[in-house]
Length: 171
Image (cartoon, rainbow, N blue to C red; front, side, top):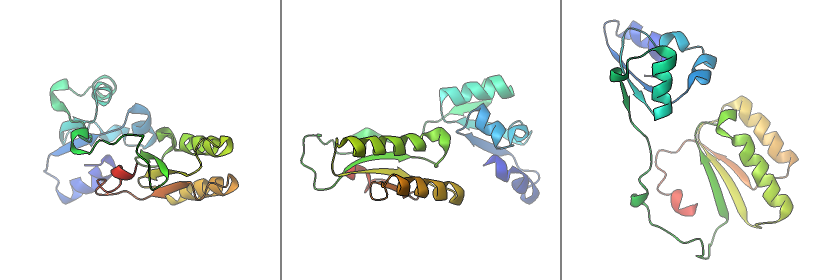
C-alpha cells in the first residue's frame, strides 16, 4: 500500500493488516510527510526495493529486519534480444530514463546532456526519452526549458508504460 492511502485503507478496512512496499529513502519519506505512518502498527510486513532501502527502514524507523523482505523490481536482460551498437539503425539514437519525473531522478541531467550533444554535434539524429508519470507543474517547466534550448524534437516525456517490450528494442 502507498503510505498516502493508508488512512483511507484503515477507514475501509479498520481491522486489516497491511504490507508496505517501499522504494524511497529517508529524505523523500520525510518530504512526503508520511514519515509517521511508516511505523503504523497495522503494517505487518514491509517489502524493500533494495539493500539501501532495507537499511533505511531498520536504522531510521527501527523496523525489525525479520519484518522486511527485499524484492528487486528489475528487468531480466536474458529476456531481451541482444543487439550490437554497430548495427545500422533505421531510427534515431535513443537514450531513455525511466521513473517518476522528479529532480532526484536526474531528469534535469537528461535535458542538460541532450543539450550538450546537440551543441557539440556528436550525434545528428537523437532522442532522449523519459518514461514515467510527470505532474503538470514540472511538465510546464520542462517544456519551457526544452523550448528555450530548442530541444522539443529531441527530448520526449512519455507517460508510464505498462509493457516496455516494444520500447526496449528501439533504445
